[in-house]
Image (cartoon, rainbow, N blue to C red; front, side):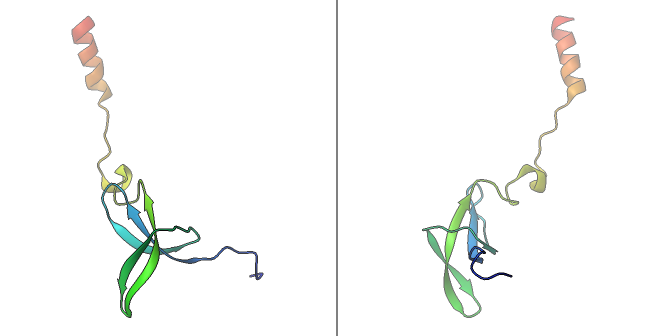
Length: 82
């Protein structure tokens, strides 16, 4: 890699705003908020980034996606206006 042209890639803690779940990963994102994270060597301080949706709260990954029953809707329409 060419030195001096790549952004800083460092450990960051992401927190899901809906569920409160936190996970440590690496990212180029930065934040002024920090959090203490327990590690094998003791407690480390990492930047904290709060996200609206993560795999912990996204309907696709949690299986809570709503399915619309289109056949039932057509029958309901025909009963009302048929």
